[in-house]
Length: 170
Image (cartoon, rainbow, N blue to C red; front, side, top):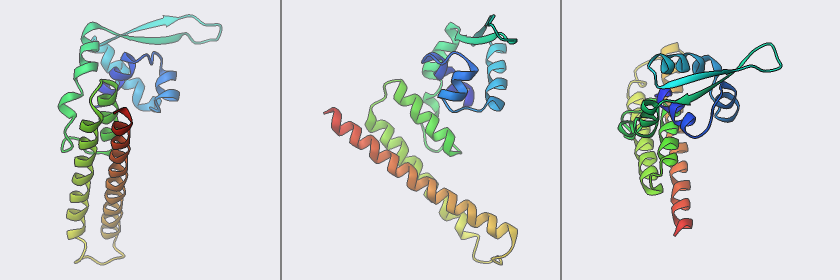
C-alpha cells in the first residue's frame, strides 16, 4: 500500500525524500526502505545531484512500469474491506482523487469504510461484557472500540465533504 502511494506521489511531482516527508507527510523511516524496494523492483530510478553541502541530493523518477502501477495499482484497493487502517483508507481516497475518480465514488468508498469500522467496533464491544474492567486486555479492547468508532465518525464526515464538492461542481 505504501509503495503504491509513494509511486502515486512521485507521479504527481514529489521528487525527493524531503518532498515526501515535508509536503506529503510521510516519515523517513518508512519512506527510505520503500524507495529502496521500488528501486530494486525497477519501478523508480534514483538520480544523485551534487550540492554545496556535504551530502548529494537524491531525486526519484518513475520508470514506465512505475508510472503504470502508480496510475492503476490503487484500483484493487478501492474497496473498504481491503483497507485495514485509517492511513490506508485516506491514501486510497487520495489516489482515487488524484486519478480523477468522481467525488460520488470516493464518497461511497468513505461511507462504506466508515460502516466497516463501525461494524468492527461493535464486534470488538461484544467481547467486553464478561471481562473485568481493570484488566489490560479489557482496557485495550475498550480503547480499540473507541478508536474504531472515532475513525468511523471521521470517515463519515469526510464523505460528507465529498458530497459538498460534488454539489459545487454542478
